Image (tube, rainbow, N blue to C red):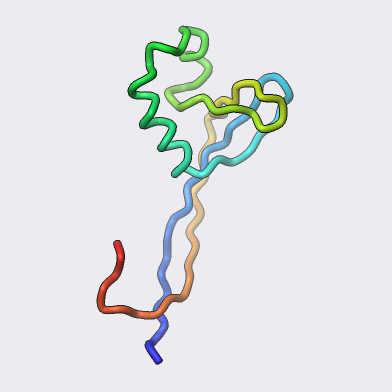
Length: 92
């Protein structure tokens, strides 16, 4: 049996909110960052009003009312850990 090793990782999330229905949620940074990468190609599609509301972050769709979901200016990072078997090769 291989020995177990504790691995720590940081989970980062951004708070998003809907201006129409007041819904809010913490969105995983991985998802937000993917949208941000696509924004580089769509920058001209945002109006000046959208740009002021989005604070440099991508706009997503509210799952409650289908309106725009904007970054609320908050982020959080949590450290987690898990146990895994120790291998000669780590995938990252």
